[in-house]
Length: 329
Image 1 (tube, rainbow, N blue to C red):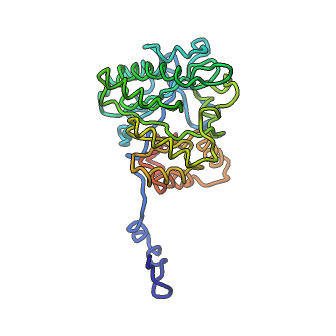
Image 2 (cartoon, rainbow, N blue to C red; image 1 turned 90 degrees about the vertical axis):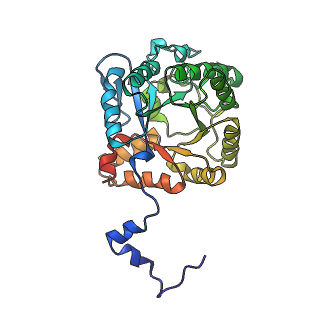
Image 3 (cartoon, helix red, strand yellow; image 1 turned 120 degrees about the horizontal axis):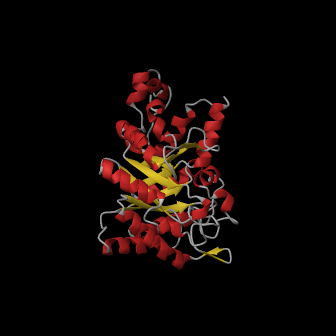
């Protein structure tokens, strides 16, 4: 690469004025880059605080229209639904995941009736919101069973597709589940339902506030290291992505986000597939609490989101998505 040399070349020339800086920007954000997560609770006309996540709430299904209306005004292309399952509805098998009247199904029916295809809806495919032990699959002697869990995930995927889900997002990290879900969807008339695979999901300590939000934190027995990835590995991440693409994934997710920008970059460069990043609850809460305490400036939000784009992410799941009008000013 020939770059010239000082003093004939002065890189600060393009930084002198605002118009010049904008002219040579390499990465930017628009509403198209955001996916808005929405937490659901049972009941009517409720908006419930999540103590570990400042300015993030759980909503009853009848309250989420205002969020969706705002997302549409802002130009956000997709929302993601996550349920808070009441303790009495949880069991070791996570059977509430297959209830056609569970929170996600209720929300899907309402959204598709009211909004049709105005906005995309992504649904989590995993059992951790529904199991009494807090794991993403069926448990036997503290080990999550792979093939048996996949059979449940297939049925969960078919139910969500039937209710109108546009993008199924298996976040469970079972081996082989993408291929089996894709085959089942195609067989049952859902060839156009997309799959966003959480292909690279690390066993991370950044998930704590999310587990509060869906009510699984107090239930979790042990850790998830026997199915989620070791955060020290990157070659393994590329193998996971390659397998999921081969099995039929339309898009892939890297989770968490900021500590794994290198992974996002490697995945994008190697596979040229749409890559989503998840700015997870721990990242969000660290930034938000730092801002609220005056330790860091609120501009770190934009800085962190641009980092995802710079690394190669096509879109970002972030709890800041409902505030993009202020962030992008």
